[in-house]
Every structure is written in structure tokens, then in C-alpha cells.
Image: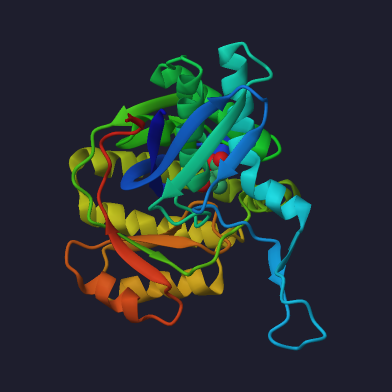
Length: 330
Ligand code: MEV
């Protein structure tokens, strides 16, 4: 049974603006989503994914009242469950296409040590890992470029046509990458002392991307803010090439301010960012789509991680290593 895994990522710079063709620099982190896939000849898909949270499923039963049934009744809100599995579903459709077999079914099992839906690229990692494992289950081995491209098409479809290549390319390739429109490449990067913290929430990427689009269409200065993020990323690339970690931190702070101006931060993300800065981090910003989820800070000491662990807004915090490998096959 083929198992494929793909890493999550943090954005050093450039989320949201990358959707408008500005450059972005995501970095893969050593936390992975693993997909194990076996083909089924009865055309069914059976998904076992304890790692995905199926928001919208409720279980109801009586707690001892003899008038109530003690048999658990499961109800699901179909739209929300469908939203949770749409990346896997679209990835399997893509695998069927490369296999040239439109009716093949799959047993899919997904597990993850990456927080899901928290802005750490879990949907791209789920997409890359499940597409690759499903293709292998059909005896097709995809090269990295094809895998990254197909995973991008899957993400775009799952996000109603709004996605950049950044997350899926980073998950397929690993390391630090630079993405500008269709141009995706790997970057040399010094060791970066990432600290990640989550507020336990999860933003809806599609809705947040659509919100930025509405703002940019309504206000020219919001469109200028997107351009300013692009300028900042270009400065950040120079700092990365020079290994100037202090400058990277300063630019992360500015990037967070610009993302706030686009309306994608939140009270708890701001609180985590300020906790990190107060603890002496070199810089801190939200990472990913925002609205809730994760921040990333730079700190070579353990002061930021200790302060974040005590912050009321923080659900979990950890140090993240750059993952040199993207897709891995077992
Ligand atoms: C989400 O991880 C990153 C966004 O820029 C959307 C995208 O690039 O597809 C918000």
C-alpha cells in the first residue's frame, strides 16, 4: 500500500499578495501529512481520516433519561463535511485522470502531525500526499513538477478558482521556495529559528481570499497594499540571501501590519504576535490565510516559545525546523 507524505509550511513573507502575482516566500516545516491509499475495484471511496476535523458532525443521545434513546444518533451537515473532504476528493479525481481510469475507487487513510486548517499548509500537504499516493496505487509515478502542477489545479478547484502555486509547490518540493505567478523555484536559506503558535482557530481560506479581493476592488489603497507586500518580499529575498536574520524579522513585522490592513488578522493572532515581540522575537507575523490559526516568529532563544506557551490566546506552540524534503514516499 503506497504511503506518501508532504510537509506543512510557514510563510516567511507574501501570503495573499501572491494570489495577485506578487512574489512570496513560503518555507516547508518538518511536520507532515501522511496519506496511505489502496485501490478498490468496486468504485467506492472509503476515507479514514482521524486527522481531518469533520466540523458539522454531531452525536446526540440521552444521558440516562429513560424517555430518551441512549443509542448515539449521528447527524451531519453535508455542506460542512463536504468542505472538509473536498481537497481529498479533488486529488482522487486528478489521480483517476492520470491513471486513465475514471471509475477506480480508493481506500484512503490520512494522518498528520501538522495542525489541520490552521494556516500551516495542511490542505496543500493533504492534496500532494493523497494525489501522489493515489497515483502510485494505480501504478503511476508522478514527477515533482507534474505533481506540484496537478496539486495546484486541485487546490484551485477546491478554493473556487482562487489559489496561488505557493502552498502546493512548497509541499511538493520542500525547503524555502519563491513563487511569483507561474514561476516557482527553490531558494538557498540559512537555518531559520522559527517558532510557531496556534490560537486553535482556523480561517476559511476561500472566504479570506475573496474578502481581500473585494477590498482591493473597492479601494485603490488596498490594491497598493498588495503591491507594497510584493516590494517587501523583494527586500526579504535580499535579506535571506545575505543571511540577515534581524532584517528578516523586521520585515516580518511590517508584513504582519500590511496583512492586518487587508483585514485578515484577528484579535488572537495580534495578541500572539505581540506576545512574541514582547518576549524579544526578531519579528512575528500571521502565517497563511489568517482569520485565526497560526503565527510564525523568529527567535534563536527559547524566550518566545516560553512566553507564547503562557499566553491566554495560545493553544499550542512549537519550534519548527525547515524541512529540506518535500514529498516523501514510503
Ligand atoms: C494560504 O495558505 C495562502 C494564500 O495566499 C492563498 C494562496 O496562496 O492560495 C492566502
